[in-house]
Amino acid sequence: MLLFPQKNEKTTGTDQIFYILTERRDIIDKLGQLLRLAGFSQVEAIASSVLQTTSLQLTSQARGVIIDVGDSANPQETILAIKTLVPRDIWCCVVGNQDAITLAQLYARQGLHYFYLGAQDDELIRIVTTGKTVSGFRWAVNISVLGCKGGVGNTSIAYQLVNKIIQIRQMPTLFIQGKAGSNDLDLLFDKKMNQELIPANKYLDLMCLQDETLPQLKYETTEKYNFVVYEETVNSAEKERIRQIVELSSCLIVVLDRSMSSVRVARQMIEINESINRSRRTPRRLLLCLSDSRPVSSEMLSQEDIQALIQRKIDIVFPWRKTRQRSSFFPLKSRISPADLLTRRVLGTSETPKHFNLLSKCKRIGGI
Image (cartoon, rainbow, N blue to C red; front, side, top):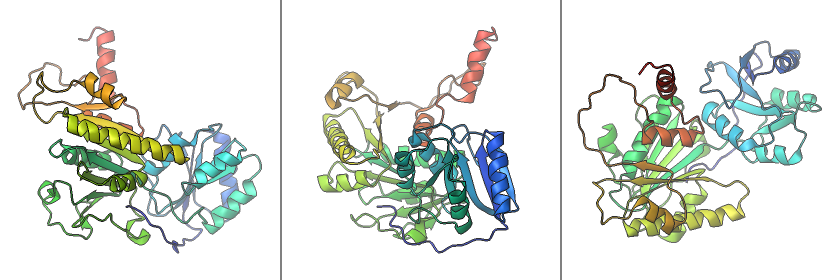
């Protein structure tokens, strides 16, 4: 659906900047010395952990980024952080204290080299000098927002998600709407849509599919995107098509309402996802969103009923809300919005907003 890579022939010179992302001073000194001896005169340190970094300010002269993961032996969070922080056209590798072949293989499947700092210094510098990648590419964060029924609001949810991703990360993003979607990207973004890529703003491009085949995008066209969001309603889709979409997604967002028909479709997608995960080494993330596009009545299924039927917890609820004025002497909200919560879970960042911490602190000191 999203990326079918080909060899990337792009090369750069040793006069460009290498960044080292680590909290450890000794690693900054060690890698900085090795890089300078190899001919890279411009080396800059970013004193932070990759899991604590919210954004990377890299210049246009960036040659590559070396990320130190220390003693971490679980790469999944690190890989997601790299995908959401490092532009895909910038070379990147990981270094750490673990001498494990399986760990290196896990990173390699995502197009990343992993080097053991205790014994692979020479190999690290050799790969850095050549700019060689593991497989010629790094996958984007492929996000599919799939509606279990028409009118449940999955286009609106996908639209909010896309806008919040580019607001938080400011990374190149592609928004694709399938033929069975609401076909209203032209109205949402005030753009005339066709099969080609349409620029929406500095960080966002759009594509609206005109047929039911999944897009066959070439690597040269899509290598710049860190995020690809695909949105479609799949309640009438063939099982094999749903399976194809799930297989090509790294994050699956299933949107359902309180109807039995949408619950059946959601259960089918959960079963397909579980089946694929059992046969794949890298499972994809699944987020279930309950969207109330109309007022909830007693005749509708409750959240507890739905969770019992699908045998899984609902992750996020988008409640029905009428537009109304609210007065408050304290302007800060005490809760994170469903769209913000969804975005944070997709990006793998903290789910506690800064204003919530401030509000809690004010309550503790008797401010309110």
